[in-house]
Image (cartoon, rainbow, N blue to C red; front, top):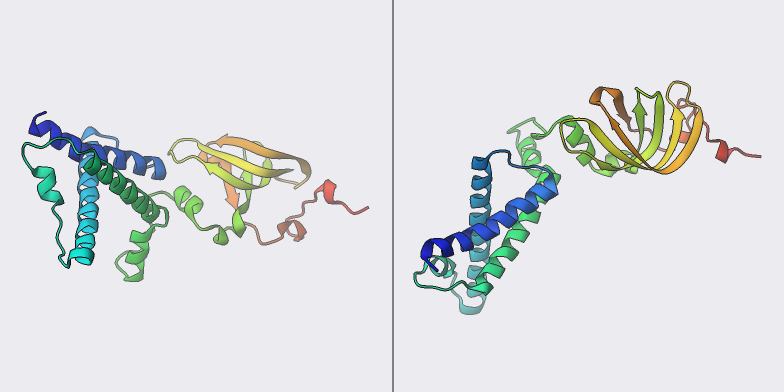
Length: 227
């Protein structure tokens, strides 16, 4: 096996896996071949850097020397494919992917930027992503009203799944209580409900706690009527 093939195996596999996992976890996919190749390269370098740092830290602990031979091992000539090295690089790529997904999920880059007054932007995504990624303690523990303006219906529910594309807004609602939107008349309940609408036909409202007891919402569940 020639050196180019070995280098592609060593450098490519962790990068391909890392790029795939981050796209899967965050919903952010590279749309061009150039961006895909760049993402694979960056993930490969990051994976081996993390692995080299771990090796150097282990050497410092056991041998009192902060040193890693990983780069020399990867670039060495006349070598065979090391399953152990590939396995460690893949594990490093998985670790890096989950760390980056966590940073993306909690928007840590922009939060730090806001703290030091470097930016006032909340992130690159639209408000749809920002709302759904917000902590549940900021959204009445996840319980919201979804108002379907097209069908004149209102759903008191928990949003269990939401689409991450820029096209039609898709929602999977759980533990749904359905009312008319204009008169707030109770209609029925269901365990789950799939909803697909144009972005202009939906409104999501975070109610106050115990909204069912608040007079301003003016809706009543017949199943909870007192005898």
